[in-house]
Picture 1 (cartoon, helix red, strand yellow):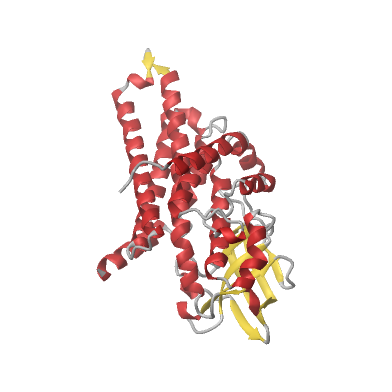
Picture 2: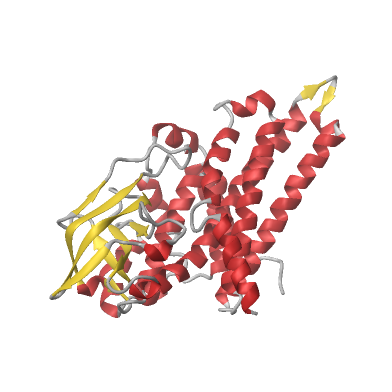
Length: 379
């Protein structure tokens, strides 16, 4: 049990922080306001290995651990939540190909995913199936050496811009055993996209429906065997939950730092805010919650790396706690700024907006409780 970063971890933590400080933080507010998806910046991140953090080295991946990735995503999100979160999604989709794809599929896609010459999206949610993911209806019917897809996916980050879509589709019976996983390439006839959604946060990445209308996808683009798609999707989400929790750490840490600095400068009733014990206690609680969340994320990441049988439960616990705590910390930081926190001249309102969705995606925090309780009663 080691709580100190190794020399290597401290080194790439610094690389990630320096990248965020130079390339993300100065532009985050403008990207949010204009709805700009910073693809050139994503590719700069890929040059440092951040697009393939736990992809094997034989295809150019960084080949790090889930714990290492959590450290990196905290730093990237300190600079820009939405951009860091999209890099997390790209990593998750790429990992599914790396872990479960055959040699041909890995060779076809991964070298260009590593550099983000190809950008990847993850497609599970549908208009009629959110938390009940196993009830998905997008149909894939075998026709010779192709599947013919009909249906749609909802709330897909990168939709319309990404080059490949890792999609869960129904090839068999109702329920999880009838789901398979396919890679659908942009430009495939029958693939189209809905309008870009108008969102509360995460405005520097596009979000839209992915629509299939007699879309023909080669059988060779299937990841794993028929019927394995739901298991693959859930295993991908274990890591995705850690990443999104780590993103909550970075953003809430940025909010805490902003609040701490503001309290040293702002004076009311003739003294600095730092001299009011009630506000000291508030800041102390924020810092304590942040530290507790970080420990939970890193512990769960370590267990996932070791394929501990409790890893899924611990990932759910960590995601639930870290995303709830992150939203509270950012909201409290805004409150400490009073009316100024509500203005876009300060980053707090953006932090609050960006973090809110972390309690919903990669499985809502209510579903995290379902997973935790289910695992508890299995023991």
